View 1 (cartoon, rainbow, N blue to C red):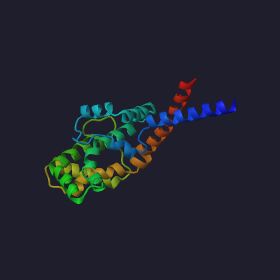
View 2 (cartoon, helix red, strand yellow):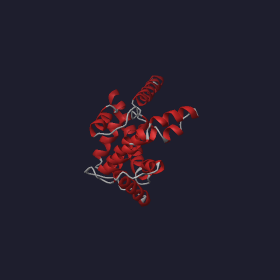
View 3 (tube, rainbow, N blue to C red):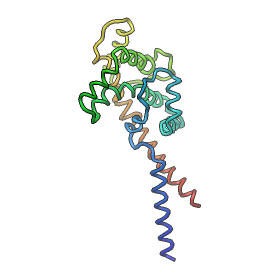
Length: 207
């Protein structure tokens, strides 16, 4: 009798491991963002909506933030999704295992004009609130906010700005309140909550 019970418990544990692996979300926020398609830049709300619809775990995480009544975190998440294309084709490429030649080819595909368009779209929509969004991102780094605002004004007026200034939009992704104390922290809460719910669902299915 004890042997049968032991075998049953072993089968249950194996089943739980299999189900957990099958329903496993990306284990870090960075891994979640890597699932965002980066073949083309995101410019419109409609495209953002489609990205969420086509991405199960991105949608579930956003739903979690919505249920937790965290609209500012949802805005931060959307900003990360919005800028993933720019990140992947600049800093993300430099961190990859591709050869130097491939990196240079990839960077050359992202023209200065497109980078500036993406910078303006990201700062107008998420940092400065020029597009009339309900929630804008409040950065912990006030100096970075001032730099982004100044670059936005310069580009809007058609003044020359450096590539370094344009790339500062990616520094906002690592802002303390946006990443470490923001979306990343809540994604870890989400993962923990998801893990508990998955185990409970598996146990209930066995009853």
